[in-house]
Image (tube, rainbow, N blue to C red):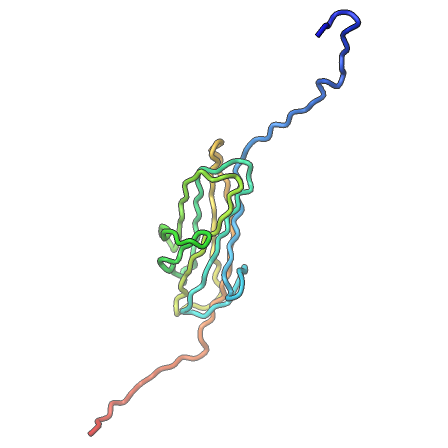
Length: 178
């Protein structure tokens, strides 16, 4: 280029370019549902003594890859985890760690992409003496792979438990048969 004399032309919009630098951040969406016999829903009704199947769907909605995902599900006191029923995307996985007051935890180590999507299902048994409405809480914590920042989300599903309206008691009087 010749910048001397009349050969030089300054383009006034040459430096009017903007550069956007977007900071990467982790973000997560948790969706908790329960199977009602035909589809996944936010609430269902079930009899005491039966099992229910819960679903926790996790979707990464941030711009940063993830290094760690912790899923904790707090079952109501009247419910208990059914061993061997955990699945991720339809494939059996190890049972969760069970701690405290009916807390189930799955700890997943990445890396996970910023578009990660998966779901975990598991069964829980409802105690025979239960009745009323129970809320099942799931929460998810993730850590960004680069920033180390954490993101959190939680969601609930409800189960209305009904007890049978009748009870059956069987008694027998022994008789002597000759």
